[in-house]
Image: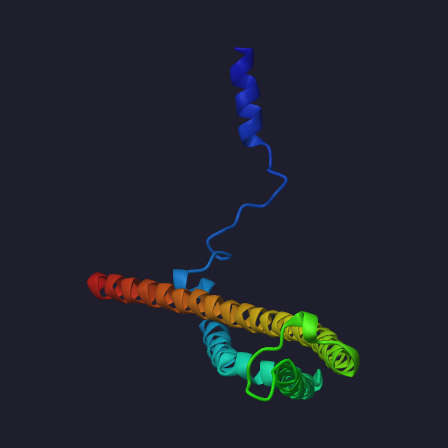
Length: 194
């Protein structure tokens, strides 16, 4: 039988890769775990997770305040408020020019000459202030958007760091639990064998 001879030949030849013998295999499943290193790594992961958590606490408000001040947005906001006050005062003055001594509105057709020039100058001044205010407000809004972007980026980075250490801590805790389960089973097996 030619097939039988081939099968026997295969069984009797030496394999090219050695098979682990009883002496090279761990005698106990717990020998597969370097529990000292696992516990050391777990301690490091827990400490790093706490550090990342502490970094997250107040990060948004601290970063916002820092970036806001760096960008000089407080000064811009003050300038805008000052211009708003000027606009309000100039409008009140112009509106006063549009009334007679009794406080009644003067009809448009009666506003001529020097009075018309004064009202036109006041209106031009108000429009100039409004344009200046709008320009500053646009700068302020762009600055705020940049500050918010930086806060979001820094927060995302810190959250990623925290999540990494939290997952690492969970993984290592699971290894310790598995080691303890195997150790308990080994001890129970040894006690039963005695």
